[in-house]
Length: 150
Ligand SMILES: [Cu+2]
Image (cartoon, rainbow, N blue to C red):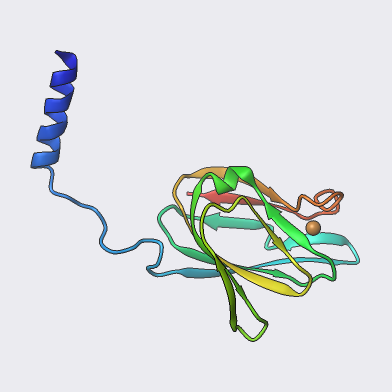
């Protein structure tokens, strides 16, 4: 009986509630580009910026640029679970297209003097989500940051 009532109330709600779904593809509309540098200097290793403030439902393109002579990683399992990744694109320094990777991304490794473009939409909020380079000693050397999603 309880199940029938729930189904009935759901059906009524759907029938009487005007659809307010957003139009179009949210992962492609009004994309905001953010630059994110992975590098090192005399004081150690860094992510710049080391703090990102994002909002749910907004499409982003983060350009991950490794300015260093060694590879670095962007790893955060908590962050990955809170976003929808549309694609990761690999482009040359001149911006020429090289490759496009689609599907669930759990970690991005960027080679020396290389950039990748990561297209995603945050779908869950979160505070002080840590992102770090998972290569041995890199997080301890300063390659760590925080992401907030409102
Ligand atoms: Cu690193």
